Image (cartoon, rainbow, N blue to C red; front, side, top):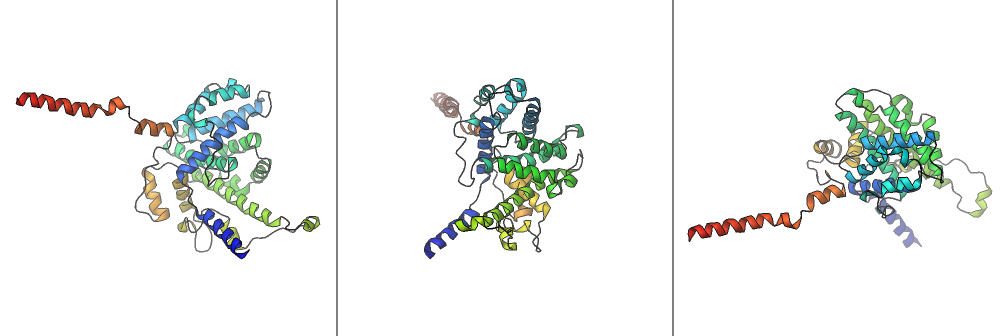
Length: 341
């Protein structure tokens, strides 16, 4: 029994420190996007009502601007749905017709990675990527009128969760926390079109919200009765030790030591850099952030292009084209030989 107990502890420890690669995060986000589009938009055979239709339209347009632009197959879906929004919101069949045109929404959308528990986990990855994408969109916007106010983005996310998040408990808890200005978002998230520090707060707010949910879920698991006779007893609120609460939050001190201050609080600037490292494709800023947040002096740039279509376009050269250099060399050799003779 003790051997099994130690084995379970080892397994839990390994699971906690298993690397969740950026590629896996991106793929899980793709899968949950596809799953949500297929299973969470239409709950019956009726068209979306005006309010739900507007919420869906705002969500699609937000994703068009905030998801990595080289996710070409997913952006084809977003573009098609956005351009034909009236038809897409009429019926599930119409929406599915747009999805089938893209390889990003194939039938393997339920095969989430081993580091992700499934649909809800993958949707959180999508949400985090979106918040980093809003910062990038705003940072690169040519003029203030193109900037996405983070207050409006947060409201759009909330409305999407209210209408389309297919997890009743998740939806109820998120909305309750949001309506109560959880994580002080009512103060932190504004409508500035020039304040880059405010734009960062969107990603930090969602990260803090996700951590708070993880802590709450751990408390709820501890409150669950261990024996049948305890079900009739009054359950007292469970409290976590400081160590348990720290272990429920991400990133851990092992993953990002510089994210934590000595007093157990967070360094928000380092955390933002770490979020960008984990949830945004590598670019010219990644090396700098890895040095600041992780103390690394080199970076792997293999994730500059994550989309399968892009990788195929880059790596898959037609055979006829690949033979051109060989043919050219042979021809030059034959001409040179003829001239020598």
